[in-house]
Amino acid sequence: MGSGAALLRRLAQSGTINAPMKPEDIKKHNEFRHICLKNAEELLDGASAMLEKKLDHIAFHLSVLALEEIGKVELMGVRLMAAKHPSDREMNLDIDDHEKKLFFAIWGQSFGKQKISQKQIDDQRGLAKNLHERRMDYFYANPDDMLSWRDKMKEGEAKMIHGFVEARLKLEQAEGDVSEEVAGPDDPNLQWFFKAVDDPQKRKEIWSPASQQKLIELGDVKKWIPWLREVYEQNEGAMRELLQKEMTRQKPSDEEAWKPKWRVRVKIKTPSHSIRNKALNELNAQSSMLKLKQSDKNTLIIELTLPKKVPVQGLWDYSYGYCRMFVAALNIATRGLFWWNVPVDISRFYDEIWDLESNAGVRLELNPRLQLDWKSMRLVLGSTELSLTGLVFQYISHLWMEKHAEAIDLYVSGISLLAKNDVHLRLELNAFEQFYKALKTALQMNGHWDGKSDLKKAAHEQLTLFYGDQTANVDAMLDLGAELEAKHATIKPITLTEVIAMKAYCDAYLIKLAKEFEENRSGTKIEIVLGSDPTPAPPRSGDKS
Image 1: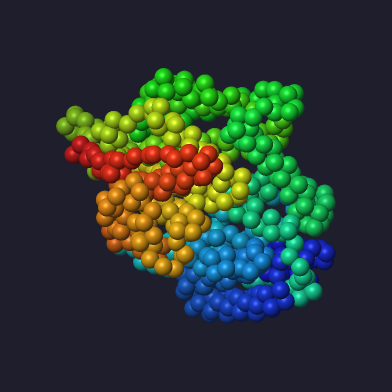
Image 2: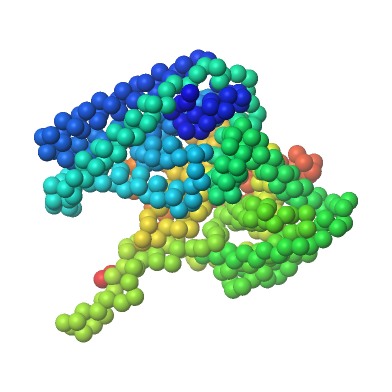
């Protein structure tokens, strides 16, 4: 007895874990499974006909589409298990994410049967990406590539992928439907598991070799998931205790457990702010766990001291989680850019170009450069900025402890993408999208937007605290975000100017929430004033060639 999703199959086969699904959910899943597999079968029939007519590019395309239909079955199984009453968002099958569907189709059969290395997962992701890109290249003509599909495809390539998908379809068909007998009361372990696999950090540990080896040793998903949950809850409990101690400066009852054991040193770069030692010293006097040092005027050293209470197996989670929250707070509070790395190749890909005929150097640069003119703003990481960082950090810590940090996760993804944006990988659109989603999510989670009414009105109401009536640009940014979300592209190009503007609106709203949290917690009124212009100057143009 099995299902379309490999994990759902293992759970159904265990026979004793109650899936958080009702009989009608399982019936819907099985009906959807039949449709997808029928689609896949018919697509393969079409591919066979195209192979006979020697139209290999169409056969390749139809075979990959059939594989996507199998991937949709796998995704459906996972989504059905993810929540008691799946919402439209939770039931999203990522219809537009072709690579994700292909990955699940390729990877799904392996779950719980053998230990899969990170390299194997990466290889399978690479295969999914490669299949999609080849399909697009063969099927669609490109004015920049004046070759027909016959010139691009290898002989037998379409036949090979057709055979692979045909074999994969037979495996999926042999699994059969999910029995309605597996439906029952909600299982808290499953609810925890499906939320955990949506967390990028937890997901790495869940699919780690050690975790997979434990699954194989136990031989039962029913025993494996509670084991995972127990490990994580022990680690999270200790992390909460650490954060609570740091926030309240309380003296621990067990002195031995709180003796310093680990020191973690992290280097953070900033193109936006000049770092001043005096302000760092003031913050260092207030914290026993966290110390900040200046390496140079644009490099900040974070030294984190953790006690014996932190086990070595939890050291990565504790140290990275803490630093990630602090760096997020820095970005929000300063409205600048702080990250582990910052773009280097912002206008060139080369060291030198030489005109051999004229015996002279030639300088070619991307225009405009992928760099905002932070220097013109003369931003300093001083006492005020660090004090506000502490305020925001306490709020983010509270969100993490209450497991409501979805908006912060999106925001941090935006920062990470912004920090990696260079001439080799243009990520302005992706970073903008993450900041847009972060703002929407934060507004909705805090009851300031219901997800259906006018988003612009909700944003204006929250941002007027800092910007007054100077929020005209908000409408333009939100329109861009809505267009991007609906069409996955925008007519007007999204540049660094738009990215930083959307980040700035996230910053202002999150600072407002942090302020309100601290006022409610301490009973003290806090006054914060931000400038009206949320963005630095546009990117500077490079030298003309």
